[in-house]
Image (tube, rainbow, N blue to C red; front, side, top):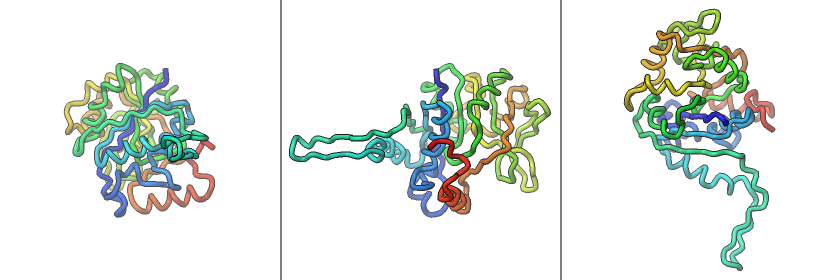
Length: 260
C-alpha cells in the first residue's frame, strides 16, 4: 500500500509579496503552477500518489484548484447544441487521490497534523511543508526510515536558513532540536519527513507547534533521526526565493524536476 503524504499548507504566508495576501503561500506559482503542485509531482515521481493537504488560510482556493484540475489540464469540447454536453479529449491529470482538510485558520503545525489523523490511519506516513522543493530521493528516504525503526525521520539540509537546528551524531540520531540562532551554520529540518503513527501521542491541541515540543521530545526519547541531503533544497520564504525558483524553472532544468 502506498504511503500517504501529508502536506502542511495552512499558514498565512505573510513574508512574501502582495501575492500571498491574495492566496495561500502553497498556491503561489512557479512556472505557472502552484508550488504545491511541484511538491506533489516530486512525490508522484517516486510513486507516492495519495495526498492529505492540511489547509487553513483561504482553503477554498486549494479546493477549487483541484476541483477544476482536470479541466485546466485537458482539451475540452463544450457542445451547447446537444444538451450542453462536455467532452474531455486528453485527460492528462495525474493518478492522484487528494484529500483537502480545513485544519483551521490559526491552528499550529502540530495541531494541523493531529486534525488529519482520521485520514492517515494507523500507518507510517510522509510529511512535508507546502512551500519547499528539493531533489531528495524519496524512495531512499523511506528505506532509511524503515532501516532504523525510530519514530521520526527528518531530511537534514545544510543551509544558512531560519529554521529549527539539529544536533546530529554520526549514525544519524538527532540528539536535540532547537530554534535557530542567526549565527548558526548547522543542519536544519528541511521537511520531507517520515513518521510513525506513534507521533500522535506527542501532539496535544491546536496550539501544538510540531517543531517545538513534539520534535524536542522525540529527540530526548532517541526517536528522531536525520536523513542527510547534500543536494538541492529551496523553500519559498521571501520574494527573493520566489524569483530564484522562477529563474531556475525558466532555465529548463530546475533541479527538483525529475518528472518530464
